[in-house]
Length: 229
Image (tube, rainbow, N blue to C red; front, side, top):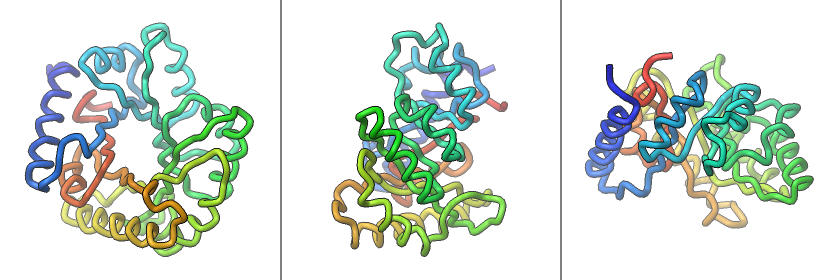
């Protein structure tokens, strides 16, 4: 059985190869280890192997890990990557580096409000349903442009870019990743601070190489690091 450390090494090598093919630098892509359903001990093993960015999807599980003795005192960079309901924002707002899955303007407004209460500035991404599947959350590529207009003026938060979960087929996924990149380009055209819109969170264990070829700046890898859930 492969160890988390050796899995991380293999993933990093694949990232390096994908960046080489894309003509990009490795430091342009942030690896987020998706640790949902995994133990604090497994996260600690990944940390000891040099991983610093971790992604969680469930609020209660995330809060338990933040307090876990195995991770006590470690400056873990937590990304909340799951669907976030407005009524749960207050529980995580002061504990996350970035919120990836904002799919309603009302949730962005709640994030702004709660960040203000903590005197924080919180980075977030808008989720886009580029595969147009009814089972997925997210704005359509067209409606996210209008939603962003409402979000730009919110205090105590910074819209940094877009995220998506693509179709299972890699060929479809690559087309969808390209569409997300094009959507971000459109978003920058009307943004008050286009230089802030740098992030494309896209690509998972089965398609992160395609995502890197299409400009991903953050990839969310779970299975390839921690094994099957």
